Image (cartoon, rainbow over all chains, first blue to last red; front, side, top):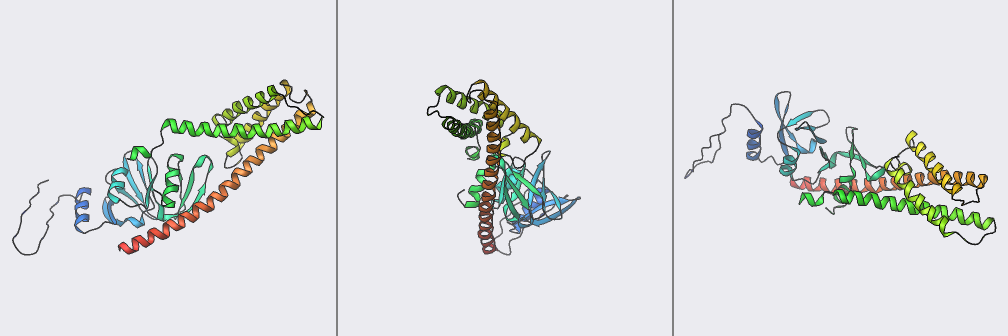
Length: 146
Length: 159
């Protein structure tokens, strides 16, 4: 990608983006310029959409592809779960298994299971099991001791 | 930083071993109570160290079996075929050890009552863990609501 940066002595500052295809990288740049800290870009059926992170129920990594689930949409995201966690920097998103991140604000109830596992019921009614490996950290997160 | 938070294989093993240790001690004390009560009823005021050694060793062995073969059947979320099979086989092992170890003077009736006691104990342990999880549910959900309340406030302030 060619980057052309020019300093101007006066006048309004502007950024012009020229793209052939609206890729994830371009969306990210637009997001930064729009100051969209609480929004992410993704694709639904070849269409780029922007969505508030608050709306996400959970994210799942399947075959090295990341999918974000809302109540009615499945959005394909660029990058990995790790990159999402690093970029989002929000305590409400918790990694509850190797391939799953949940939005704690969208959990409607929790159930304690044997072997120190936790069953999280999301607002959509879906159940996500928080494995023993992550359950202790999850309890600490809820108590604010993390 | 992230790696430090991950539970190592050794820590996982240690957690499991502590669980087995706890289980073995729990059942040992329950058996010791039954054994002592049995002896007192039949007019004996002493307990054999050899019998106690057999008890603790069998408790350890069966605790390993319960955890590694029957998926911690006494702590299960619900009772299924695997759990019932676990209870039955573990009870059978204890009864055989008690019979051939001469804990109850090879009395069939005492061994059968002991079998009933073990099964009742398994049921009690299962119910105790269930009640414990129900209490834990309440704590977890209260913590969840508090977390959501606080983070909603933070998010609203950000906006």
